[in-house]
Image (cartoon, rainbow, N blue to C red; front, side):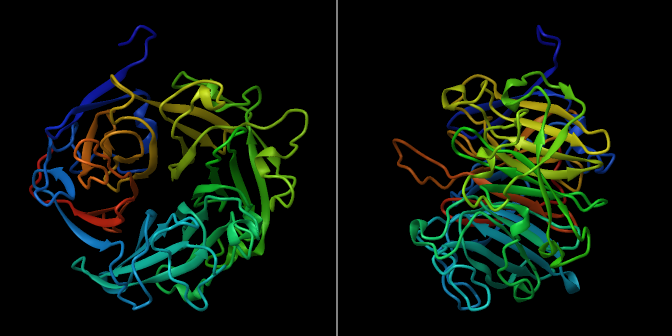
Length: 463
């Protein structure tokens, strides 16, 4: 028990020979798993033990686990449409027919991307855009049967989220307009992608959902409200949004019908980073209509929301629905960059029925901010009830698991050194997700672009 009465759980995460890393969590971890299985299946209390160095130098996993490389950037797409694009990011898995799994994978490519998403007729929004999505189909044995372009001509496709009707919403993390950087069309939109047949969805921007630096989305499966995070790079920072569809929960293409975009206002809290105490709760959360969702003249976060203003936060990233609430991540806040206060990562919970916002968890490195344990990015709930967190910080990069008891363990470590022997550097993880049956974890290494399938070993014993 710390001096301020909060319980902080610490656990050694990785012993891989180079260094020992640790992470701290403060707050009520149990809240994060609302609506998931009541018991931990295969996750135990402290994970699966130390990571074992991979002799191939790709991915370290606990003893008894194994991986398969599904895709590598630069390799030929099986469709013959070109090369596997760079920078795989957000991703989700969907059930297909006859035991197949469809993976939809973002590519966060900017104008200078080394390997852009190939343009394909009928699937390209703006030929000048280098980003987009690719789709992989895996058979019942987990082998790749097809790999093709799912949408092209978009830009900086970072994260997104699945819909209750089985499609993927891919988000552009930019607000560049036509004629900027050679673009022929405005960017900063959400697009819907059909994982089984991308041509059914095409390349149509969901303009009513706003034009801003989108990060991730989560859909309320009962009301159909879509929640959206904004990862803005400069002050004033991003907003947390909700989109009220005109045709909620009406299936593929229904979000094109339009709706109302609103931004969250927490009375008395202009910047979420000013809140530091886990468990802090704010009732009476308000939602203000966005004056100009298309940001024709002014970026949304800079628009006039009236004398009461609006609530901002730095680095709003991961977003998911759990139980009766939506959870979202602020990866970090730095006062030197304009935030009200500093932190190394927060997870917030918004309960729509109670109109209540709660700071659930605060992340923080145990000793040194240069060590792993900072900057949570993509997150997802494991079918077994655990939380998986992709790290996007300094030093070695991990996928962390978190149990209901608050114990933290390393599930994977990236071993692909993109630096030098003297100054090693490792790319971040992104897009962690699970197969529909829960037996396989999929995750991307951002650089060099690699998509892995990690098999849950039947005899792996939690420790």
